[in-house]
Every structure is written in C-alpha cells, then in structure tokens.
Image 1 (cartoon, rainbow, N blue to C red):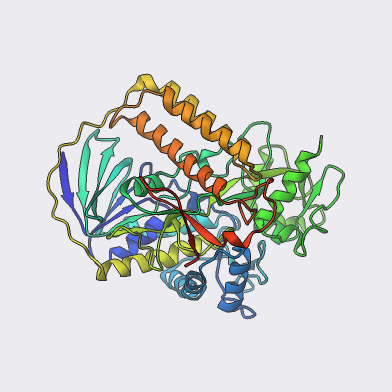
Image 2 (image 1 turned 180 degrees about the vertical axis):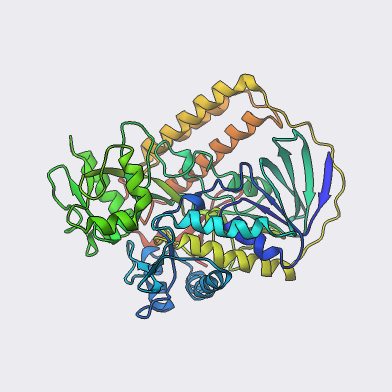
Length: 522
C-alpha cells in the first residue's frame, strides 16, 4: 500500500474544508481529500447567505442574543460568543481578500432571515451565496502550491493509536489504489447527514460519512436527535425538491394554506420569520388536515426586486411553470441541516488527540437545539481558523508502522440490494424520524434497521458493505438520541412528550462500545 506524509489532512471540500486547507497552508503542506469533485458540497448550494453583525444598527451582542434564543437553552454561550465576535473579523478578512458581496447604494446589502432581529445576512449572487463563496475560496485553494487536492478519494478509516489520530487510509476511485496518508493534524469537514432522508435539500451523498469515521475511531458524537427541517422546500409530485431560501420570507413573502390564510400570524410574534422548527411544525400541522397544502405567496411584493434578488430561484421555478412573482409556490418542509455531530471544544478539537471537526459535521455548541439561519457558513470560517491554530500548539506524534490491510474492493452483485435498502432507510427516516416523532415509530424504525442489518451479507473492506453499515449506524444514532430525549425542544419534537423539560438541558453523547451518556451543558 502506498504511503505518504504531510503536515495537515483535511477531509471534505465544502466551505469548512476549503477554509481549513487555506488556513493550514500558511503553516505547512496540506492534503485535501474529497470523495467526489471539489465543487460538490452542501456549502455550494447554500442560498440565503452568511450572518454577521456588520450593520450600523447591529452588534455582536444582538447576534449573540438571537443565536442563544434560537438554540432553546442548549447553546454553549462561550462558543456563540466566539462565533459572533470572531465572525465579524473573518468576514472582513474575506472582503479584504477580494470576496464580493452584493451591494445596495454602495454598501453591502444585508438581508433578514428567520429569528434574526436585525438585517445581518450578507449575500452574493443574489440567492447563490454558497456557490459564490465556495468558488471564491476554491480559486485560492487551487492556486496554492502547498495544497494538494485528491478528488474521488474515499476515506476508509482514521488511523488511531493510544487515542492519538495520526492519519487516514483512503481509496482513490480514479487510480483504483488504496493509500495511507499520515499527518500530525487531521481535520474532518465532511458536512452533515440530512441527505439520508427521502425528502431533503441536501445532495443524497450527504450521509454522515465524517461522523461515522470519527465514531468508529472512538470520538464522541453529540445531540444527533436535532435535525433541522427547512420549511420552504418546493413541493413536487416526486421527492425531488428545490430549496427556496428563507430570505424570500425575509423580504416579505407570506405562507398561506389552501384557503389563502396566513396561518403563522397567530402562532408566533415573528410570523413567517419564526424559528425554523416552529414554522416547519406549523406547516406539518397544516398538512395533517385533509386536502390542505401550503404555499409561498409573493404577489404583493415588487416583482422586479424579487426577480433581481432571487434570480436563481426565479429561473428554477420557471422550469416547473411557476412564476415566483405572481404564482402560489407549493412548499413543504425537508430535511436540511444536522445540528448535532462530532463533539468538539472551542477550537474544533475532539476527544481524540490531533483530530478536529469543523462545519456541519461538528457539534461545537453554537447551534444548541436549533440553528439560527445563516450561522452555518460563519461557523465554517470561524472554527476552521481556530482548529488550525490549536493544532500548531497541540501535536501528539505517532510513529507510523506499516499495517497489512485486506484489499478494498467493490462487489457489484451487492449494488441492487444496497440501493434498495438505502431507499428504504430514507423513507423510514422521513416517515418516522421527521418533524414529529413518537416512541412507537422510533422503535419500529430501529427494528427495521436491525432486520436490514441481519439480511445483508456484509464483507470486510467491501464498498457496499461499508456504505450500508454507515447508513444504519448514523440512523441508529439519531433514533437512539431521539428516544432518550423525552421532550420537545428545537429541531426535536415528540408528540408523546410535547413540552419542554428542564431535566433535558443536557447533551446526549454516543461513543462506540459505550452506553449513551447524558451530561450537563458545558
């Protein structure tokens, strides 16, 4: 097996991974690994923008308060303080580097999104902020001589000895070869797991890969029960969907039912701009009524402004014969963001030395029980820099000793069965582990997962075996956490426990070969 050594390994090519690589390149050579191409990531499809308190009427304290409120008691105040204060610095650095955000009258145009009390959402390309940000940072990554990008490289496992992570084992789909890469700092930035649901705004490749890598290596996994559902996802006859940015509601769009009624007005003081969990829940209740549907309504707004501000959404909807400026747009919630993930400290550090997690794959305590809109891209920028800085001062060296691994291979005869089970898991999650949960449905899903596990012929180092095991394990982590949390809070709602319960002001931690832990807030 080929062996190479570098100074930093970054796994993932979304904004968290690209920013981590760029920061790390100032201090050494970086190997950037992605299982697909460099431009495929959740970050690329982020529409709304990136939140930062740069407005003349805003300040980090206001941003802090909004974030804490959205997190429903589970945010780590220290993490949030770091996010909102250092976030302004990171945004200014991006601008100085040449990033162009949209302007209005010569100043950066700031949008409003759900649960924000101030206009603080920077956007680029109208409703294509993620794409523009990723393109901008990727350009700098590709020009950097210290960063070696390995596309189509699947990370099979992390190499850990005596709780020190010292490298990865990968398989390259282009060369067909497996390889060992070692480094004194490994950063996981692989995104979330909402692509496991049948109705999702994520690429279906977003399946918790980094979480499973860390879990199998012994890392702590936190608060997996909190899955955020984006309220305004285009509703079509199939599970295919398209995200319609919350910024659309920020500009004044209404949510109405089939009778033309604005049902959010008497549900929350912020109406359509209530926290995402509240809006998604109220939309779910509307859909429980026979024959009812929910629509976005914009015909009362300036059509030219809407067409300019949301040009990509406007064009996409025209493909479905819907005019955003005058037609009712059918929408329904879809799995969007995994709030939980690999538990980290204030520098993205995990309980395994040399191993870091940045972005959606991590659980830094920033989001609590429910992420505040447009805080995710900011989290990537802030904690990517902090992880790299921490790694420079905290290195635990392990001498690499060659290990004989069984050859990695693909058994094509398993493909059809794997895809069938993957789709079955997606439907089970959407039906039973969605916006509303209950003990009976959660246990039924666990039983179904066990049946899938028992009926599949797993083989060591075989692609479909590893993929299916990963899907089953991620789903189990979500369900087991949801069963433990006997309350309704943020992105987790139990119809059999509909109230907040202060006994669950806690984190639920999973670690391989250990029983789940319930621990007080940091």
